[in-house]
Length: 370
Image 1 (cartoon, rainbow, N blue to C red):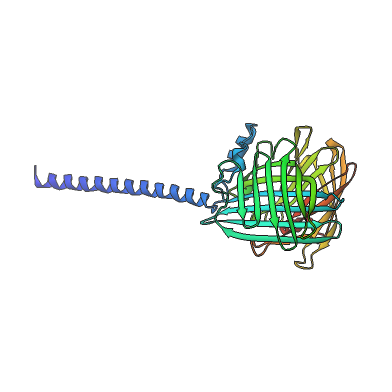
Image 2 (image 1 turned 180 degrees about the vertical axis):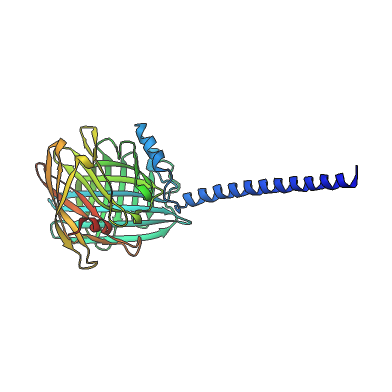
């Protein structure tokens, strides 16, 4: 072979090697990008685990995407919480209300937060508790959840649950049993929060309670009814505002309504459920009319929370008003989740009577404009 031909062959060989090297480099970069995307999504650094198009396709399949009791257990998503509110009555007729929530956040390191409040509705004495710890105390519970944190316990599987809590001011030791079928929010159990992400969400809206509770030194046997929510997904609650209503009517109907807002107070989603006699009806914005009637200004944060409400659900012939049991129910969670919100019991009057809980975040206040 001539020297000139040898040079041409060598040049072609070098070009082929370069092309191969560039291809391998591009492939490596693609693999790295995919791995980084998966890592960021798992750590909650990306806003959603599915696109809106994916969610709407799933919704159109009209099938439940939550599997129980397996999905009672903890997941690997960025945000997750287990939440209870309850109304109690003692043997002497004394009435109490409480809320108890465990938040699990999976960022680059997992941590668990407890929020709880307890109200003596006869005297107006209200106390709260919060704590934050590293890790996931329920990691080894394959079916259900089992959070044990000092004198605090939240355990449950398939609607048979146990709650315990104790502070210097109050305590409770309660057994709960679900009395109705689970309710899957959105019909499928999956909700779209727009840019904030998507969330799996189901409720056990009426759970019977038996146990002991009260202010310290005055505990007594109690009975009552609780509401349970479980929600998880790769979304960030700090990007949302909400007004959330969980109502148990005396005629056996259970109503959940939630009005979500973007971080700048723009309406994002209005939805809910009406459940009675084992049948759940989905509610959309066209089915619900809500109107705040009065506000309470917190002396701590100066936020003006809408606490008294008028609610209409015409298809169910519901026209009710809600009145808070105790206005001073702002929860100062700046030590644990770095936020404040209003959380408390409400009484239901009007076409139907009952009781429930209301939760309002400060972001939602921008939309109400008192």
